[in-house]
Length: 403
Image 1: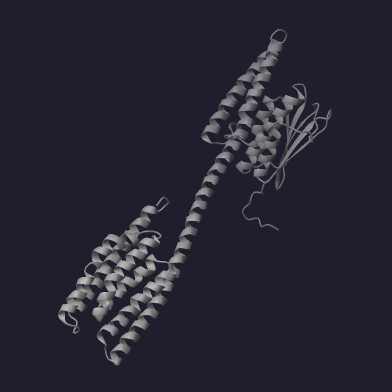
Image 2: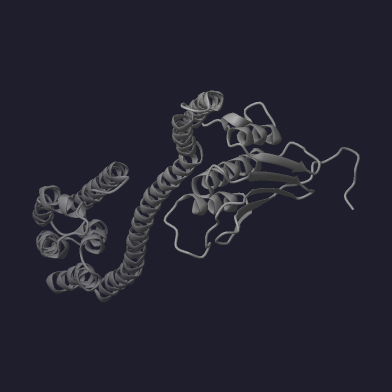
């Protein structure tokens, strides 16, 4: 068996086949005892009938037992096994009526190894042929014949009903086992797909984080290096200011890298408020910051999205609008919304044009993760405004009822 839980199933079947071994042994021993102690016929006939029963044991052990363990049993082997068993059982049952007790061990094996049609034929033979042969051989009284015949018919009907019911139960169990196997395979596939989806989502998240932090920091460093190279010959004080800004940007990138590895909050938000983090960010990008509304602590998710959105918008402004463009950040607190806008007066662009960049798509995706929206307004020659609106809840004040 090459499926999950095979070891458990094999162990359970080992217990089941041992029970059948015990059942067969008890039925065989009881039949042998009844045959040897029967009142009729004479002793030599009873011994001959008992001798016919003896080979049933090795025949069961050598052929029947392995056959019962097959799933499903091979029909040719099953027919040969039961034909051999009946070749030993039927003559003994014709000679001594008590031998028919052995039918209780053979009939279940018919239903366990044969298809329905052949099992019904075999059960009919096992129940009726011994009575017919016994009646022809011993010529019993009408009363004995009627009793034996009635008993065999009742046994046949009982065997057919119980056997058919057992077969239906087995078929239902097989169908359920098949369904369970399919469900188990589907569960494993869902687990695999979930793991793959989780890995993909984590890669996308890390790509977005790196793009919004480290990549932008490195871009700022490159731009500052170019500015320093241009200023070294004629404006050393300004070059020194840019070098200091480079030092601060590099340190900030290092802090962001450590925060990403540790899974912590962004370095700018570590131990400070969102407006303070945006002020430092604005200073690094030579932008202005305007804060309106009642400043208050917000859920970490909303503050991280606001900060990352500003980082992305500022990076795009410096990259596309140029270093000479004026850039302003507006942070607005309201009862249920946090709004952050980044505006530049650069050359602008057409928002409807195809864009190969990752930043704007990532900005919209990040805002959508917390139920917010991101809007980009721009036109060639008219600058660009990026506005991100995030839903937030009003803090609960003790003793104040909502109305």
